[in-house]
Image 1 (cartoon, rainbow, N blue to C red):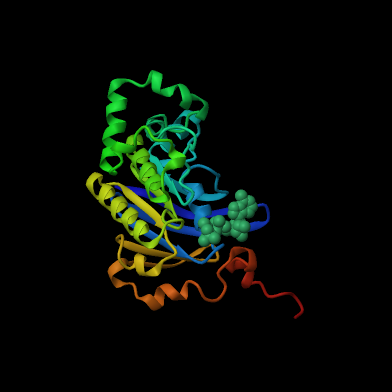
Image 2 (tube, rainbow, N blue to C red):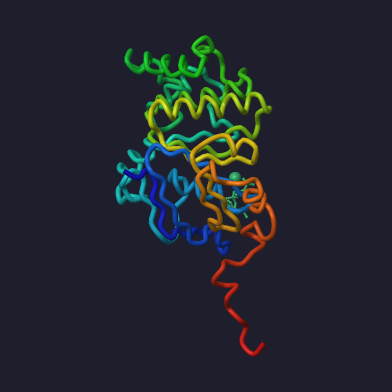
Length: 267
Ligand SMILES: Nc1ncnc2c1ncn2[C@@H]1O[C@H](COP(=O)(O)OP(=O)(O)OP(=O)(O)O)[C@@H](O)[C@H]1O
Ligand SMILES: [Mg+2]
């Protein structure tokens, strides 16, 4: 079964044509590293995939279901299956590590619930939250305030939250961009371990090519809103990857391909 099926997807921000006809299938259990220069559309793709912003044309299917589904309840259920890990950690800073992980079980419900959440959480939920924290090596930090954790630890909490959420797809947008090289590697190791254990599907952006050569099953490269590289990791060369950063890379400084083919009249 496929986890993610993207067919000829286009996305505009106003007049800016960001995603320019992306077609991509990711089987369940595959770990894909997404590369591309600043402004080529990687985060936009990820935002479309986790339902944060709608695409304008084409189709996206997650776990066999179209996105966006018609009803809000369906969308919420589908989003629950997509865990996100961002560069900025996206944790609630002024509550405990434990509460942040519990929040994973609530999916996308209102943050206001968080402060009272612990009172309502069943023993089963609490146990699961502790197990998730234990898996990422942070059980001893459960009661600490999130803002007192290092970046690497905060990213571990974010991973624990996706485990608690029982996400089937993890969208990780530059998960190690704010971390030092050692902490970054540790996070990538942990992420790959947990997705392997649970057979999760991952789409992860990175800017470090030497890491891209070491993690995941497949490398996808984007340039100016299109996919220009799609190769099993073992077969990708450094030169192939370096090409992604040369030439017209940004969507805001390039025309979509079909526009380039237009020859102005009388010239
Ligand atoms: N919410 C938004 N509204 C308008 N334009 C946006 C929005 N989000 C992104 N863009 C524009 O879309 C283009 C692609 O941005 P995107 O964040 O997807 O790139 P990226 O590949 O993730 O880059 P980076 O490597 O810097 O994170 C950029 O020109 C950006 O300014
Ligand atoms: Mg980005």
